[in-house]
Length: 237
Image (tube, rainbow, N blue to C red; front, top):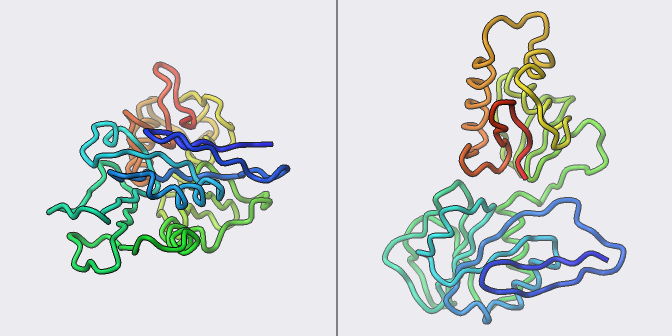
């Protein structure tokens, strides 16, 4: 029977029903000066396969190192002068009390206290779970929140379409087909370009750099593509 544990400064454990498991998970970072007040919401999120991390302060330096799909910022008891902007690309949802309006920035807001199920629906809408992909489709390859459709030659993250060139698409396909194994630069040359390849191994690095930029990936703290020095690349942990 699997269990899911939230990380960070709050360690709450939620056990899902026996026989159930999560085929995918997304990371949500909650920032709240009083996280205990959000326990019902945290339980709802972890029970629905979200990886939840909780921090007390928006200025915590650890936040700059995290890859997250959504930052949920609790401003029910305080309202900073500036909007919260994560260092890495991610959605932001702000919790506000019922009588507050005019939050700084353009982030969506949600009233709290509220039904945790209603906030879960808002989270799923933001992350793009309203129309989940078919987990059993043999023509779809997945890594974290990315879906690569081999028939349509498309890459999506939630409901967002990521436009790639054919070479970038093939590079990502080769990585996913390795299922976490390392692909050398020579592997990419043979599997992506084949007999049409002319040039040095740095040609592969140039295309991987472009692919990372379109995925919003950081080579120093990778979410999707990790560099194996002196060899090539693999999927990030």
